[in-house]
Image (cartoon, rainbow, N blue to C red; front, side, top):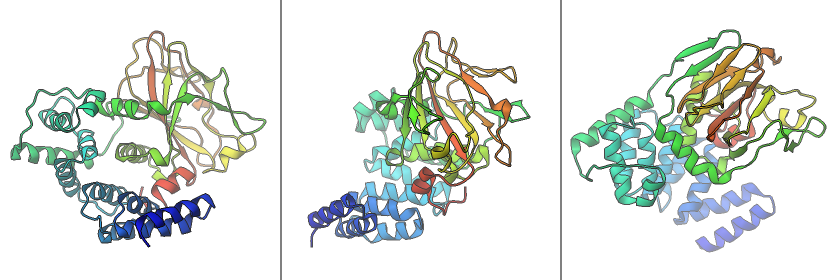
Length: 376
């Protein structure tokens, strides 16, 4: 048996719907040294036991591959196995120095955009991957150096950022409540999310109350990219983790992140995010009621584009990096009438946001990405 035969058997098992058998073949291919097979099996195994997933990666022939090491770190950190923030930071920079561009991109998400440390890592990205640097607007005049003092400063800043605890900048309403977190995401992170996932955009839909299926309707005129588990990376997981903290909800109860683009004139008319078990039956089965909503503004909109709560007379202007969190239902799952809200049309520019809906119970997305082992 060789790698090629294992992959062939895995594909055949997958095509027949036998996921467990497919994963066993991928496990064997991974043990033989196939990087992609090893990572596919490791992520599958991490849903139930991330420690065993890490142990598997430590035993494969490709264990020393820097890409494998990066994903091992990702699984360990988001599986609550690797909790030493300085070790995480140090490993990210070490992997970046070995040519793992993704590790540098992750590091940038923990650094202040206008800082010397950000410029230092951005210069390394520009040197190693100029096309990626251009796409992400990573302008840096710094020379690529091996300055040990800067390396240490980067590690310290990342470590501190990894341990950050977020508090609301303001509370606009105490009845739902509506909490606002200003500058929760950096300009870099906002641009990263738009750049990486905008190719997935499709016309937005609403739920047809007669069939429970998605339909295109004038109520919601925008484009949406659903960031499914197969598209998740470190930075989307980071956003999941931050939203979990500020909403005080488990990561496994979240729906997939939705990237939304509203072109000038497009809007989302007044609506509730909360679900009706009868009319939204199919959606309701996946995690039950939507208890909370998080809106993440990815750009500043100068005219229009506000989030409106008409029953509370509240108007929120989109500002790059700001996150707004509000409840949709009470502790008994009953709809909160004041959660009625809308997205006003932008006048002259695109409006970019990410939405995250939190459910009462574990969702399919939450189970696939985080399993049942996570602390939060």
